[in-house]
Image: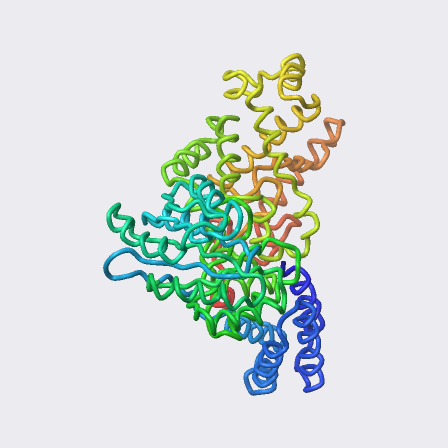
Amino acid sequence: MFDTLSDRLAATFKNLRGKGRLSEADIDATARDIRIALLEADVALPVVRAFIKQVKERALGSEVSGALNPAQQIIKIVNEELISILGGETRRLRYAKTGPTVIMLAGLQGAGKTTLAGKLGHWLKSQKHTPLLVACDLQRPNAVNQLGVVAERAGVAFYGPEPGNGVGDPVKVARDSIEYAKQKQYDVVIVDTAGRLGIDAEMMQQAADIRAAVQPDEVLFVVDAMVGQDAVTTAQAFLEGVDFTGVVLSKLDGDARGGAALSVAHVTGRQIMFASNGEKVDEFDAFHPDRMASRILGMGDMLSLIEKAEQTFSQAEAEKMASKLQGGGKDFTLDDFLGQLEQVQKMGSISKLLGMLPGMGQIRDQINNIDDKDVNRVGAIIKSMTPAERTDPKIINGSRRLRIAKGSGVQVGEVNSLVERFFEARKMMSAMASGKGIPGMPGIPGMGGGGKKSAKKAPAAKGRKKSGNPLKRAQEEAAAAERRALGPAGGQEAAPGGAFGLGAGKGPADFELPKEFKDLL
């Protein structure tokens, strides 16, 4: 969603690099480019004005004028101001001290409240809570059935006593759900209310009545991140009518301009608490302003990537894989390789995971072209092998490769490629696990060398050719003996090391560096 904004900001900062000092004209030009980038991203005009004012004030101050690298200082200022506009610190849910915590969802029709209720329930369940989804949207056709299906998919409890489709009192359902939750010992109640088409006074009053009936601990305004500047108008209307306590962004994986995300928190004074970025129930997480600002500026989001890995990979499994690789990698089989691929798949889309790495914005097109079905194809190839072939891929000959290709529905070339890539990956992972660095790459300080290379033996030094004439050879040997007796002063052959100024008679064992060299080292 923020790709266009990221590209524009990256181009702006690129123009600043290489400048030792920034003039007022440079700062004005940079501020103008940032303003255009934000407006093109559909950020609300009041937000843009406040943002540019803060950036210019700080950029023209001593903060940048005295900096060693003004370009990096400007990027730091923009990053900090982005974090501030997005809400500053991460806002956590407030839980009730006694009784079930009540969370009420409100928002426009089509914003994705019902789907988001299931995602929030699934997220709370992963946080060791026992949530209950309550169907209070009794106007929209099949809204009650939809919430029931979403609750089942998320693996959480559902309460929907009324059939909906215009039948039933949503305020009564909301009130009764609290007693039901207390009886069944659910500690969080998520109330899904009816959506509104624009600013509907009657429906807004209904939402206010539900709020008065259940006294929610949190009222979350669900906003479609693809709506644009209209989200700000809607948010202000809901703030006056229902008075929400936090914002949830849905459809953050869309390709529309994401100005709503940068505008709502600043205009309403209510922080963004959660963000939904996909269709699956697990594609939902807490919103971190600092991480989102880092993504927008192309710095990646390593913390979120690490958290995903910690949730997916078990420590015992990781230690088991490490021990297999430490022993030269011979125990690492294609079954292990498939297991690792499946673990990565559980973390989500590979293109999204790569997008969290710093600097990946430069190859965004290549990342977006990655097809997750390729991993499924690799899995099909491995599963078409016998246990013996997975354990020892070296036995896979031509006829076996043909059988595997037919069994997995691929070409023989793909089987060949997979086997070759497996051996290369095993070699590389084994080298990294044993601290030898990556084969074929220069050694990194503290990481070992770049793999073993066969050192070429230096050719043996050729001595002085001996004459074939016995008389002449005897004369040469006598002359050589006389030169050795005279030593370096009277002969041509110097003592070991003498030619390099190490002193006569001093060999490598008794050589010592001069004091100046020692001090330098």
